[in-house]
Each structure stands twice: as structure tokens, then as C-alpha cells.
View (tube, one colour):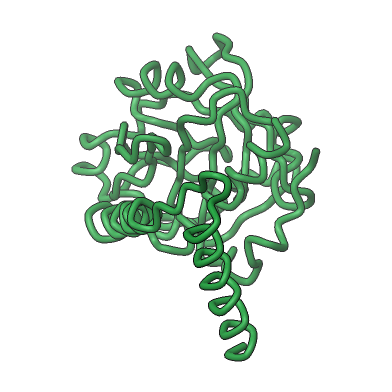
Length: 236
């Protein structure tokens, strides 16, 4: 409100005048630095949306979820965040790893969606066992293992009713030959998984080693826009 802002400004002016006249504790009133940090954050978001095409809602959801997980001490690796953008067709590189502290893009590659989620583009999502669909929302990466798809990474879904069956469904990150440029050139799309965010084989080990053991992963689709970040029910 305007009245509230007026009283806030007046109080701040009186406080600074008092300190200047009578002395007092040394406060860091570096407004320029705060402004620079805010500008840096804004430029970072612009780069992610304009250069990489990540939708702004995806960034906002991901960062909000990341902060919630970080504040509840659920992340062992809080320097990185991985985002899967299922708003785009599968021929696009929809998997991103971001260095959230240094504002850098670490990795951008192809990623598959579940075969019952859609053909070229993912449209349907499920938390149900045997649905063979992708699940949206926040995840925390777990341990690695060697399975039928080779080096793989377990995922723990942390949003109740949205993806909390992911571990039970064996939704994991693994490599797959059908996730490749060659497959796209032959079929006009990449192949589909049973619900796992499968990656190109040549990128799998690098990606898994970067985000294993306690990194935030967020899988986005515009259908999540009906839920505000503040309404995300994150399991503790």
C-alpha cells in the first residue's frame, strides 16, 4: 500500500539520519550490490528462456522447489539443478543441467518420455504403477547401479500424488539407443521409454555422475501451470 510505503521510507530516512549524527553499528547498506545481484538473476533467467528456450514457469517452479528442498536439508548437492522440459517435442534437447550458484549451463541433451505419454510430444502423465507414462514434478536423485540398461540412476519423487511412486515404478535415468540424432533422422522423433527419462548413451555417464546422490531434478510440462509453486506438496 502507498501509506505503508510512505511510513517505511520515512522511518528509513530517520534511522539513517540518526546514525549519521550520533554514530551506531556499522550496517552494510550496499544497495548497488543488491541491485547488481538482482540484475544478474534476471539476466540469467532471460538467457535460459531466450537462448535455451526453457519456459519461464519451468524455471520458477524448479527454483522454488530447489529452495524448498535445500531449506529442508534434503539436497546433498545444492550447486546443480536438472530440468526436463516436456513442453517441447522429443527432437529438441529437453534435458538441462544448470550450475545454479555460478549461473552456468553445464549440459543440454536429448531425453525420452514415456511411451504412453505421447508420440512426438508428451501430453499425458501418470504416477500409477505400470502406466508407462512420465511423471512430472520434483525429484531427488539417489544412488547409481548397473542394470539391464547399464549405468543407471534411481530417482525419488517428492511430490505427493504427482510422482511419489517413481521409486516403486523403477523410474530411473539410463541410456538408450533410441535417444539419438540417428533415430531422429530415421523416424522424425526419438524413441520412447516405459516412463524413464532416458538419455543418449554417450551422455549417460557424464550426466549421472554430475547429478547423482542428492541433486534436485524437475520435470516440467504446462499442465503444471494449474498448480502454483507455493501449492507444491513436498514430502519431507
